[in-house]
Image (tube, rainbow over all chains, first blue to last red; front, top):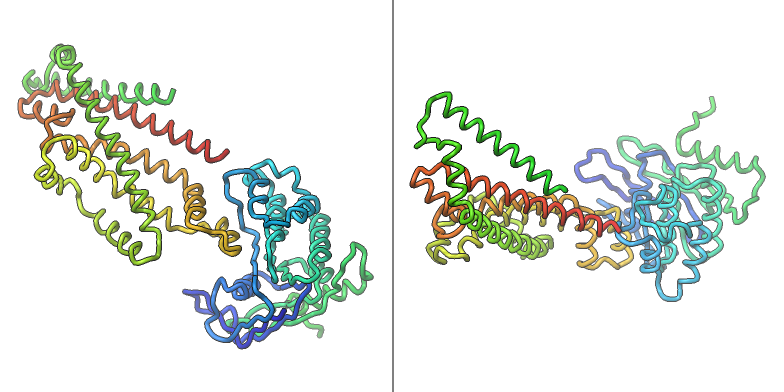
Amino acid sequence: MEIHCRNLSYTYPGGTDPVFHGLTWSLTGPGFFSFFGFSGVGKSTLARLICKDIKPESGQLTMKGVSRVLYAHNAERLPGWGSVGDHLRGVTGRGREPLLKDLIETCRIGSCMEKGFNGLSMGQKNRVNITRYLVQNFDLLILDEVLANVDEPARNRILLSLKSWFPDKTFVYISHNALEVARFSRSVFVLPQGTDQGVDFVREISGLDQTRQRGAPPELLQQKVYSILKAAGSVLPES
Amino acid sequence: MNTVVRLVQFAAIYFVVLVLLLGVKWLWGLSDYLVPSLSDIMKIAVSEGPNDFLAALNTLMVAIMGHGLAVVLATLVGLVGRSTSIAGNITRTAAYNLQAYPIVAVAPIIFLFLGDGLSSRLLIASMICYFPLLLSFIGVFSQPVDEVEHFYRSTGRLNWFLELRIRTFENMDKLITVVVGSGTTAMVGTIVAEFLAATNGIGYVIRKALYQNDLATILLALFFIGFLSSIYLSLLEYAGARVRKAANQ
């Protein structure tokens, strides 16, 4: 599975400054990857370009070995009618019921199944939303801050589970948590703070690609986090 | 309970206005010919009350039918108008332009073609409340609810029915408010139609009373109109609350 962007430019309709200007970047899957960068650098915009939700102004975006891209984001809601269980069962394809059952257990949403979506906490809503995406057929799943309201142990458990359950799929995880992306990603694609001309490159930093709760030594993790933050522009250059 | 509160509120306002009218009469020494005395109003209420009540009931029935017709029509045309097809674009453009035209001005033509019977009153009542309903319906049906629709769209599950269901559900309060609010417009439309040319209904009673300078009958008619409108609106609100409750279950 490959994604290639060449000289990609994009400006939001009505905007003056481009989000991207001549961006060239590529990704080769499968695996768990992340986009990291501060608010407004274009992580979600790049995700929306990849899933063809929006079209680039110029440049090329090509994909190989990808027939289905899904993009899940934090603001999504389930319809207000019916219970969460009804909705989840309704969108689970044939033969995926056991997977749904495992996901309900891993995401610990069993207690939500009889409730309406509006009656859930923010964290529960996030977990229900990611569950319904994971029971779909996909080649690439972009997860845009979908676990933003979930507590850290649950987040770690879910990320480790999806890495072990879907080894042949590609995930792009968008997060503001440098530690998390450093721990779990094969590669972290850091979008630096943009200028008036927009972002034109993406820095790739290898992650620890952790598959177990206890992994790399803390020093190595610290080093990765530092590299990611530095690439994003939050660490002042050494004098 | 809501109906009783609404009726009490209406009755209170009605009698305050009546007292003010009689106060003006007393203050300026107006004749009984211009403003009838309380006893004259009571006499008319006793002698004409039952007939006028039936006339107001007749008007209300036509208004309800016209209102229902307008809701059904607005839903159907709204479904066409929500689409991005040529038919949808034409429907939206026509709706936005036609709603600016005062429908009541077309009423004489309707009477010319359909006569002064039920069909004319029904058509005018429904036309008068139809356009505000249609614009709201088109607005609701064509406005995407991205936070809910995104998943179904990206997984290829979003058909027209699901899309409509999501948009209706998300805008339930707005739709209910518009439908309840247009109930009064339907009543207005029916009375206007009866003023113009009909031979039935409370509008016709008021028109006759106007020609005879019979303010007592007009005051009585206004009481029945307010009384029945209050009942209808509170029933609509009750139905709206039930729909809202059912939708949230």
